[in-house]
Length: 296
Image (cartoon, rainbow, N blue to C red; front, side):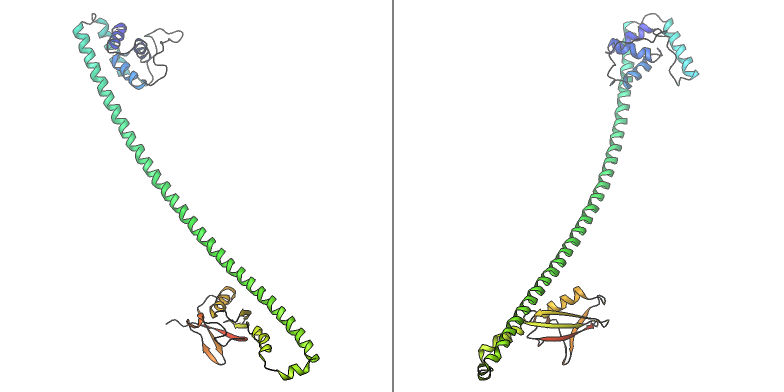
């Protein structure tokens, strides 16, 4: 039986070493079992190496494969006995057996291809699912990064405004100090020339100091909680600069508000925000009141 099975596998096109190893490792249970083994191990790197039987064993005397049932063992024994009683196969029988084995090979091949196709489809589903999850994670990270960048830009703009405002305030303070020093030295020399002071009390030469004094405007703002803010602005600055200063420095909440004066009473509109302080009559100093804006 062993020689017949080995010869049948070789006639089917399997190399001698492969056929011999398949029969030995399947316990010489027949051609079909050897065929199954060859199909499962066709990618083994040592498949074409000669079979070496373990010590104490000879080809055809290995223990039955694990998992064999008594019914399988009995059927295999009957098959072996039946094949052992047969005479050597004729050419027609060999061709018939080869044909049956080739059909079995084709069937096993189709089954394997179907299995691999299902596995490929399942892997593709998993890949797409993972891709969608990664895309969602990436999109969320991008949104978080954009929010973070927007918040950072807003903070930088706010800091830039405050920095510019501090620079303007320092420049104005320096100008005021220089003007004060200049005005003090002129007044100290005034008694030395009393005639000039009395002769031209309103001459154009005396107007520049007066104009320099009105280049600035000292604004006191009374907030909703009773506290106040005081700041110096340029006379040519718009009322919107005062409103911005209040929004950045108020501590009484964030409610919408109007600006008004108590005497003479005047409520400033959105159009007034674009007008200079000197045009609104707030130079050289004024008191502004913050009032809640009524919702229309």
